[in-house]
Image (cartoon, rainbow, N blue to C red; front, side, top):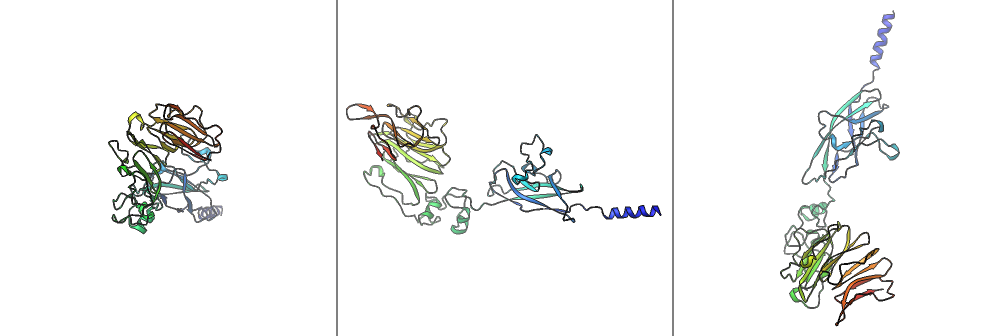
Length: 400
């Protein structure tokens, strides 16, 4: 009798044995190109015959785990590997849970050139210790709102509206980027169709310095010794006018993402013509005459927010409100006063420099020539509440 009862209990125990999880589901299996490391990319759900059971997840090695290194699943702090700099601790108060997968790989991924598929293996464990593991994958997804070629048009617009490629800056090779052509009402695929010009020039047209481009979509311009510069809305630079033997109108190949330009030089001194451009990333590019090292940038020049080209020198305003200068320095024009700070604007003249400070005052250094002798380039006493200023060859202006 007792033996029969024990057998029955054994059969009952087997019948009540919990069933292990049978699948792992992902809420998302795509990672958009250029996704930065540290982003949560999907949530995990276990398929289990017991809907009330609880589950924990972890990455495990095995078939299909080749890219486990690129992901992390949050774990209890006491279980983290102290040698894993990318380990993530569970932190419910900040929304970091065990059923999340984080992408931690630091290498950039571009869908157009490297449409990779990631393979990882995940194990789920239920409350009784039963486990199930599965090889899963993520596919790299195309970001159609990106502007890979920097022409001012998204990939979506290029492909769906204009029939162009987001990998080609100037589809019709007419010298104007696709975005600039669209902004100016022209077709980016017709080399014979040009956007309307927005330029008006006047004065001495020596070296055709007034021969403005017939394109449109321009955002900034500058005039120099006998040449002119403009920035297109797509970040490209167009130059025209005198080029002499110094190449002041020969824009460096590949120059892009420009936000500001300045043109320097002195009409009476051909070997002073030069150009300078500020890129969106705060770096500076110069070209043209390099006499007196006016194109040799300071080694630690960075975080620049504005540039100015003078007769034979250049100025740069950094985002911390300080001024850097380089080039020909016969009268101290590249020697900003010690302690100069809180500068919001700069201007480079013939032989002197100006800086507008946040409090509305102007600081000047260098020299001016009054027709008889060189004199210090001083600012008039009591000059305050200035909102803009400009430096010429031998004179200066301030707007209050």
